[in-house]
Length: 131
Image (cartoon, rainbow, N blue to C red; front, side):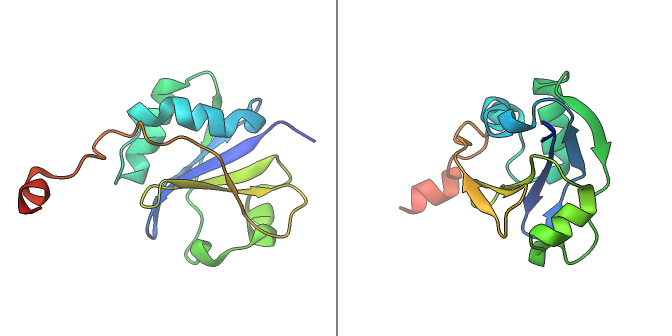
């Protein structure tokens, strides 16, 4: 198995371009956890920039965002989109969860990833005053 991965960030239906990790695919969850302070909680495209800033050596290439309908894809579609790699990782910025479509799997797996370091996760002052 190649040690590659593809990472996409999404907020609802808005999805980023993909980050292709050529050599550290198995470490994608740890790299995401470390990059959390540089990610933008509501802007998938800015997360790509933040991840690249946190781990410039890990990113081999940037790929296009997947076509419409990606949110209903299963393993087969992701595999056809990018090929046989360690997996495609989808970072859900709304739910703060990371799903992996691993190699030789029938469905996605939620992988442990600490995204609590994302900036801007605090409650807005107006909401806090209403409580």
